[in-house]
Image (tube, rainbow, N blue to C red):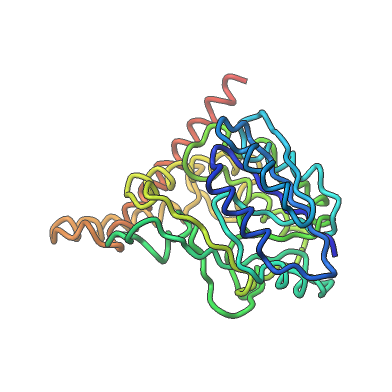
Length: 317
């Protein structure tokens, strides 16, 4: 079995070094050939030096590539264009893999009916959790995902989305759907997500590809101090839904819309209003439930802003 691991990185040299250390230290099955492709997305720090130092003692193949276009999608697609393996792994530069990660991958892909897999993103905290932290509905904002200890199937008994920080996909399946759409990504998004991963996952699902959530496929995700602030959550939700509005222009969601906005976004925001009023009267602003309801308002505001951005872009064209 052959695996190509693609890592897009930008100005996170110390974190990238930790990821590479975890990849080197992980148990690697004798029957598996592993290549790691690090795509430097126009970094100005010591990213290249980190990769070149790691290459000296690397047990397999570690490659450095440079992508000048400032976009996570461009960096990922650059790395994916180099893929020759049967299976492609996608990891983020602020993660560390569990020592059994490669062994779990080898075991799961022995089943030819499995097209892609993912697993838990467990937090590596930089500080204490604040009391308002919404750990259930909005844990994904900081990259914390744990769906339990059972193998689950996407689209059947698991309604999660395949994210690109802990993903393994058969190369032929990814190539068939076209990997990541070049118009989506983070070229102008500082916080949040360009929805390129959601778009890719939905196209996978549309082809009938079979994916599993595997609880043993664990990565540890670093949560920096700036992500443990309300400002970060607000900006993430706003920008995420700006991007969602742009993604909807490519392929509308299979839901009902009202004045161009998915009704579930409007409904969630409207239902949040009485909770926020009650909290204001009771001075309970600093709990996780109230903050979750506030974030629903930021999501609606982001989608509306995305619609305006989309219309202005169309008008200029």
